[in-house]
Image 1 (cartoon, rainbow over the protein chains, first blue to last red):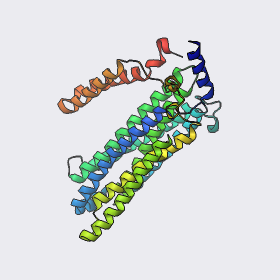
Image 2 (image 1 turned 90 degrees about the horizontal axis):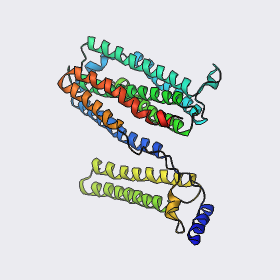
Image 3 (image 1 turned 135 degrees about the horizontal axis):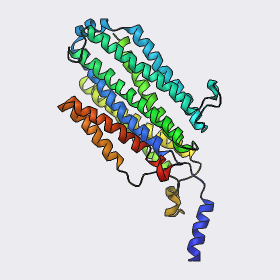
Length: 212
Length: 138
């Protein structure tokens, strides 16, 4: 018995401490890979329909309000930056602000700001949908309407899901006495998701609004 | 870990080589590039490089060899802090039921979806905060 225990003691003293990749971060990235394929499918539908009916696209894309959507895009892209500042705060395990100045903000304040920007984006999308429906572009009007609402709508649902995730992560920061690495990890993986949704929107904006 | 990424790099090299041969062969045979197969072969190589690059960076960042890569390691040397895993939980079942109700509502009658959303709010909060309340509060 003495031999067995001394052998394992030797192992622990000789084996170096190994930093494994965080399994939650890796799992999130793998899942986001499957999300990429989901949106790739939607892009494929868009290009296929457009290739089949170019004259329909010529007529329907003229209705789009590009400057309006550009402002909305800038709001969403800026939310990725505020989200990343929240992650930097989470990585130094700072949940709350130490003063009103933005460079002293904690994760919670940055994520509230991100939430507000994301909510403005979704509200802007709803307003844009209302305008387009009044112009006669609906989910069932024609193939352009279908794929327009399918792509931007699924993206909008993802943004909404991200908003719920931000609230849950903010709630975790309030729920614990000491903000630790577990809470920081959930903040980091939600930021991965948020950046992904943001990049998908940049792709959608370029394809739907710029490549008219 | 080194063997892992060397194998993946070999897979990538083979895919790039096969892709190049495929392009040349189809040019000689039919005079045009066959895009579906060419894209599939080259992107398979890119995917292998992705995973190889990730493993290479992980290997450099981990500051030593994993126990499973050492001939002198014991089984229990591979029991470091891998993360927190819930031993069991009822919440995901309720969460799945709420999602099922939402989709049932979309298909059969919108009022069911509202019940599903209400159930979802309860279940997602219960699941996310399961280890933040009661005995587990910290």
